[in-house]
Amino acid sequence: MISPMSFCIAFSYRSVFTLLLLLSLSLHAFCQAPAATAPSPSASRPTAPVPNANPAAGPLSAAAARSQAAQKEVGEQFSRGWGKKLQAGGTTAVVQLLVSMFGAIFVFERIFNLRRNKIIPAGLGAKARQLWKDGDFEQLENLEKTTPCTLSRAISWVARHRHASYGDVSMGVADIIAQELEVHHQLAYPMGVVATLEPLLGLLGMILGMIQTFEVVALAGALGNPAQLAGGISEALITTGLGLALAIPFLSLFHFFKSRTNMFGSRLEKEMTGLLSDWFLSRGATDAP
Image (cartoon, rainbow, N blue to C red):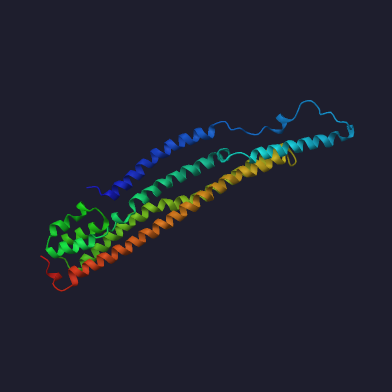
């Protein structure tokens, strides 16, 4: 019989590839959409010479016109919305978004499955004590089916091995709890991986963008157009900012779910220690049928 936790793990890993495929196709179409880019200085420059009242001021007026055109281009570049800026991030930004969506799957999985009623429901320990006291061991053995959770699986295992010694039962319960908690830790681990990859991908995108920017400047000669240099650097920094913006929440969620798992583990060990003490160490509890 497949446990709910195993089914959840299988569902997460099987569905993630289908979701990533669909998302990659949609993001590829989004990034390939024609963006409204600012006109180049050569296209915006008039073909006819600008008349000047003073012929000696011709070179100065031409330089002023080019400066104004460059300033206009820079203003249009920085006034673009974040959607256009993400498009300027290129393939690296697409990969960053796909990685974050992969991590978001495990975030939602943890939100729905890392709950108290799936690990140590309230009142279950008292119910198990009463069943043990009444001698209803058959119901204790089926407790993991009627109330599926980590605590009920440990209690059912104890009920099936109630004739064993306290040391053997205690070691078996410890193994069951450790295995269950390890599954919970593994399901939170992808969030830590995403938090680590996002800044590295952002740094890679920045380096690639800077290389492309300086190649454009080198081809333009001298310092080229300052607007191209500023715009290229701005686009190169987009992936870095995106990586940090995505890494911070994923790192926070990773430590949150890790701490929550450890908290439930401590409560679970405390509850099972109390049950085993009542059943095996208290007076008369060792005479279980």
